[in-house]
Image 1: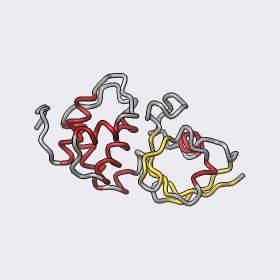
Image 2: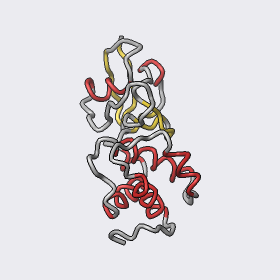
Image 3: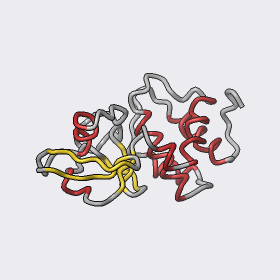
Image 4: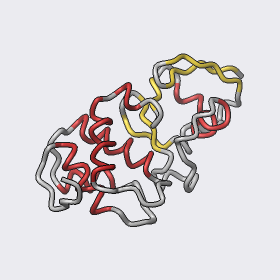
Length: 160
């Protein structure tokens, strides 16, 4: 069945089954490979995208549930949010990225956090990022990068 969705500001039509996860629509039908498959059960956050600005796990979101909501992926988040550019710059400044597999989901979650809460506390960061796993355990760098992007003091002075 054809579904028309808005992805990164562009209207796209795909012909898939109603229960096809958004993740596979993005990766296999639209060739947007930045959103990663991690666990398939919404436990790791590697597949995080935004639906109308809200972080959403694409691995368990069926295409039929997307409806007329705007989908933003890591490929389009800079166009949708100035905050994402600050997040990405802080990520690079503090060498957050190790293997990189989880980073698209991490950046999407951090962007949503700073968009709704421009001056988060450590507890706010922990809550917002808690569902995004990093096998390289760069959690302290992730927190520091979020603080740097928010203009808050950070204890990690790598590059700043």
